[in-house]
Length: 161
Ligand SMILES: [Zn+2]
Image: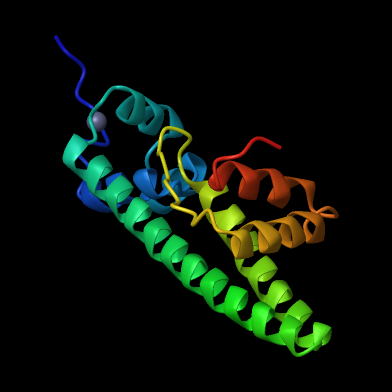
């Protein structure tokens, strides 16, 4: 006689499925919903969670990352213009603050893309213009003290570190 899955039969099953997909630890779910971690593990690895739920979650993450990438691209564009203007005016302090702003945003981006599943491809279309290349060089060197962020950024813009 086949064994019934206690998680599939659970009154809070929808919440449990959502939590598992969101990456809540099985131990936490077990404590909150009074089920065993063993049952949760079997439920998770046994393919009991509807694929549509998993796909919807991944689509949401990609959409979130794309929004963020768009914001970074806008910011980079803005910072390029700002840096260019400031450099022409000999105002290197302003130029540098623009670069710093981009760096902060790229660090956030690196964290977010790092959190994404490894099988999720995130594409970033970087304009291959001299301004961007000059700015990129500054960003990369500014990220030297943060190796993890640096390699994630390099990966995000499609270049090996
Ligand atoms: Zn199940």
